[in-house]
Image (cartoon, rainbow, N blue to C red; front, top):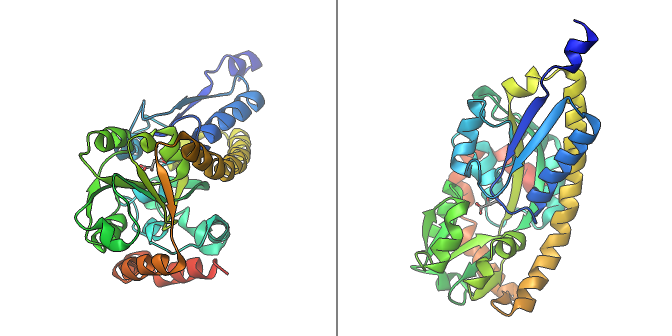
Length: 314
Ligand code: LMR
């Protein structure tokens, strides 16, 4: 093939669809990825980022990926149930003590193995991205598990998260992220669980008077593509794209650490919502109520993986 026909070849287009705002760890990671790829592979690869569920919501994006309508996404790890049961691990309440433990697990052998857990479904995990630990927000004060009884809580589409709320007699309501603000504002649900950056960037704190700093679970992402698309890229280009992605993830993780603190402070400063911390004995009550959920999902997730996650806390 002549040089001129190579030069005139259409660039590879990567559509990156996500559901959060741009001023979040994932939003910033996606923009960094675009900048790095377009700087290094100018004319060969273009990246189009679609934030705020503009292109696809979380319930559609993986199907769209299998059909080739989108090439990159980073759904929360709670949203892969249709494709693998193994990633349910990350939803087990009070499994990881903090993000450092999550990071140790993800970079370890079992964590890396999970990247390949959907290969048979045609999806390839490319890396993990942090957001942060989840907090509870509600229209009433939530201090002990009994405060959740009968309350409707929006959750992501995860059976573990449903079981977690049922364990404290709450009513879990599975809904896409794009609907959460309206559900809270109209009081169709009483509360939800999320990280400070999502509570801040989507203005949930403006319609939820109370936040409980429970740190009861993690909200992290799996950056994912279709195996067909990923392997269709010429190797030299793919390696360069992978390098850019790894760097963008490191950048996004830095933003995650920063936002967990800054967005919490912005919520405090707004005075729209009061953040409550738990005493060790109150926290213990939550652990006691929610941890029995683990046993119900052990067979689906695998004991070895759960043990590796527990070990990452040390
Ligand atoms: C949610 O649905 O609450 C989160 O998964 C949104 C996100 O991607 O952070």
